[in-house]
Length: 451
Image 1 (spheres, rainbow, N blue to C red):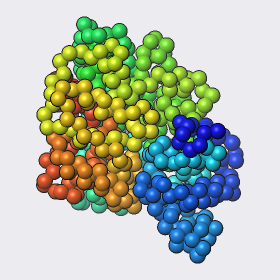
Image 2 (cartoon, helix red, strand yellow):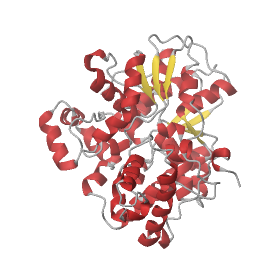
Image 3 (cartoon, one colour):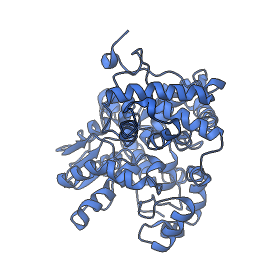
């Protein structure tokens, strides 16, 4: 047995097909066991709002111990968890292989799965997570959708807050009339067949965010890969299911995982590797899906074939060597190290990639942005998200670089909004960017202006 973090954290498969997983008495017993250990440790007090809520709840009790806390008061602790995995990956000394066997994020997930089974997830919350449907509808009327969702549009955003629970001040992603998958069919960049990595083949997982909300990330990735001679195919069977995972809908996630893994299988069998364009999706494909479907061979095959896009570029640089042509990018980069990039346990590949650019000036912020996917835009959570992300925003303002980048586009957007909240017009960065877009700029390749 290894003590605490002296051994690499290991995770157990989610036993969600076992009726005991949804047994409320057994769940409550496990919550109390874990919360009591957390109360005695308190190492995670500054990671997110879940732990301060838990510790305040216990401290306010009659005995100052968990025994005097009613189980019905646990819900705010669960609601504050964004499933970032940072407590499990970086802080908790009691994760497996320790005998205490703590996995706080997956315990919060289990609680939400019970809520989902009981029909207690609000309808408006579930509709926010229908990313493919919402992307199709909003993309068809992109100018109107973007006008209505603009945070400066007081009329429509107040209505959206009242009806959908989306905070009126939260910056929302824009939609595009032409998806990334459509652009990849008509505007595929020419490959440099003389590049060292010309033998590699990559099936690019478009992801829902890149497909509908930020196609320029995908275009930048295709441009960089083509510059390096890599053969690419864009594949998008559907959303990775992270939004549904946040709401405890494990059956829905499993269904999507099977469908997507089956769609990628023929490409993998033809010698293609897989690259995901956002870290949450890479995390799902690499780690969460195999824990939800541990006996599915297609899911296992896909999980073993997936690269995060920054991780892939770094591997090309180390294995075959990059194509020449990188030029300095002026002004420097503040790089937020996204939680779901950290949770992949691969190191800071975005920073490694950007430092391959000549004269690179990269300052890394290794702390949670506070956003947490769809969690951070909800009316009850947005002020908390800004509070949690304030140290990141403050540091980014102080660094005053030309670019603010994050592999998580929603986190990057949230950081910039936090910067503007703190410093107003002194912030010269208009929007965040994905590190692959900066790398594409250094190569002189990437997206063109489109709808």
